Image (cartoon, rainbow, N blue to C red; front, side, top):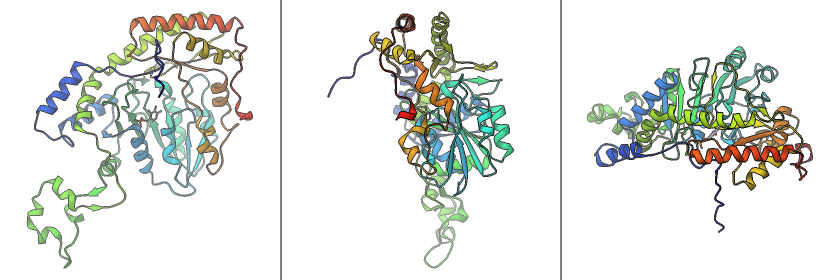
Length: 425
Ligand SMILES: *Cc1c(COP(=O)(O)O)cnc(C)c1O
């Protein structure tokens, strides 16, 4: 095995910062004799999270991917249904759709924010569109006023993937309360973490909250009238009178399973850490904003660089720091120049409609479907490390490396081979 290269500035090791407060919360839990699952920590984390984002219900799950699976499952999509999705995201946003008999339409993005472009969306909606699934790319909330108006106009549900956007705002609203169903990730690289893996779904509708709750815990219906009958056909609570009084958790064993559920409940340990992390969220996101401001100041020295747009009314969470380097070949040269200066670059994300699984999907997807997303990713798209794990010294190194790298490549020394463009792949 080769050992991983140590960068002075890693792309992202941890997205958050963990310390004494998280250790204390874990110590309290370990020393208590309370439950390790389904206890107070989970409820408290959910209640505070719902309050923070401004949603009626928040339900913890084990990952952002599971949150998206459950959210899409709520819609009970059928053959012939259509779903419009963003291509500029991580696989997990669209993966739950791969095995469904639906038609997926990739919607092009705004070239300055990389969020779903409402004008492109308008051209894709039909009377068969059941859902629009989008991401708040990098932590900058999409134009949800325009997008939800369009989607609701054809009766489609809007699902927002808020994996990057916890801590952001747009016009006084927070991701988690900007769509019909919202999904969060607490993976170790995200704005807060529940010790490496975790997720949340927020919804306003009581019936959806109930269905999410059932689905994440084996979809068991523990109501007394849903209990099975005895071999003689008698109602179980009548045959076993103690069942009327048994604890909910125990009755669960006898409940009717209505459909294939799963166990995606969050552990008390994860939730206890989540409570502490949520209290730190604003500090963690402020740190991201300060790093982004430092990098933006360097970028402002270069007229050739196109900064990402932060629309008025947006408080960006800077899960990713993004900008654009349009001169031909300059983006690729900059990646190499920063690599030589010990800055690790991860370009996020390869347009999903060009991934092999979606090219093979019916109907086929491929180049030309989202020209803006393709042009930006192959020609201009740049991300820099931007996370609270970076020390002041690392941020300074990053800014200096960025300035030196841009000077080098924009002075015309970017003649090494460029990435292949999608049509030639
Ligand atoms: C991280 C991420 C996910 C998946 O979250 P997990 O908790 O890792 O399953 C989904 N969508 C986006 C945009 C992400 O960045």
